Length: 218
Ligand code: IYR
Image (cartoon, rainbow, N blue to C red; front, side):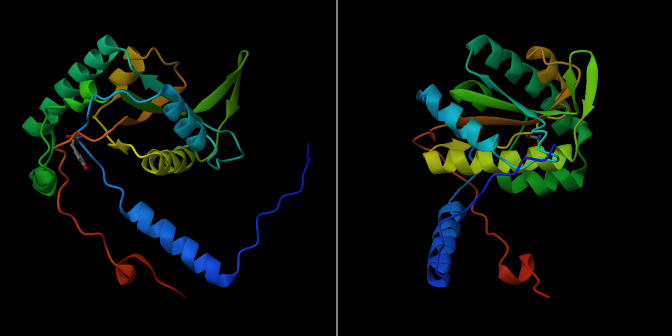
């Protein structure tokens, strides 16, 4: 069934487009991935709003193939930390190649994941391989693309709110499915601790690729 409604945006002059896009670029370019979180509380409504923003992302056939689990319970966080650290211990002690370990040097990461207990919120993003309507399976389309875009919206919304996040991928992360008791049709996609930065937070001194390296006009 096709049912269209009208849509319009505020018209912007070319000069406004330039200023607005530059301002937004500068704002987003100031975002950094953080590993040092404060345990300072954050209102639940902020988390609801950033997730609603994520869930406004485009998706294949508008199937919205995502679910966002929000963990605040200390015991659940502890279980997640312990399971993540057990996997990461294996990763850092033989499962990752030397090239991979070398590539991670600049970030100073190791198997310890204290932020999984310090950050006030863990947002665990699940992709939904298909939907279940009663006993019927309904297909989802472009699931990784859709959920990836939603996570981009989520990170932008977190930054815009004034908080910081880490895009964490403990690997393998099937333990999240078990701890959070998620249904068979879901798979963990990203684990995103969210909160205020710690007072003494630091980030690696990284440079982003420049214009010439990231774009080609034809
Ligand atoms: N999952 C591991 C290793 C790791 C991998 C990449 I690629 C990173 O950008 C950062 C870490 C960990 O969380 O430590």
